[in-house]
Amino acid sequence: MSELVTRVNSEKSFTKARRRAFFQRILGFLGKEEPGELLSFDEVRHKLPIRGQHYAGVQVIPIDRIVGSVGRYHDFNRAFMPLNPSLRERWRRIYTAAHSQEGFPPIEVYQIGEV
Image (tube, rainbow, N blue to C red; front, side, top):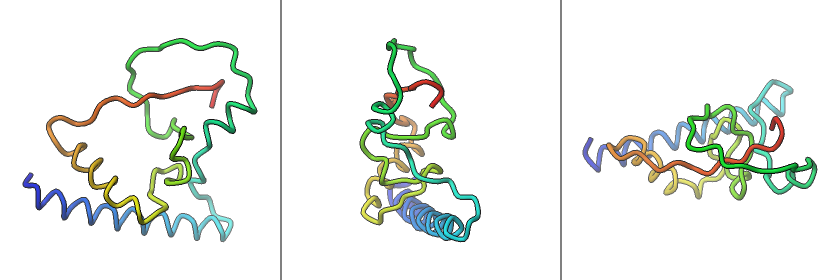
């Protein structure tokens, strides 16, 4: 895919995702089910006791099992729709990486209890 086509598609994807986040929030205000907010890792860590830790290796984790973030929990909802228009460039970079041959590197994930 050419760089220009990728950029245009990422813009469309971002606009669509922002619209979806907006409507999900409206449905939440109306009492309908919405994805909800991502949890703050620090808040969860302080509320749930950590008994130990270990490295579990590289694993594939379904996106719906990710319920929080260490530092960006306020930028996305639980469906990972962007809540902030300033995320456009970050969205473009992630979109480009996801649609390239290289992909992107693994992320660090923490599991606390069953959360």
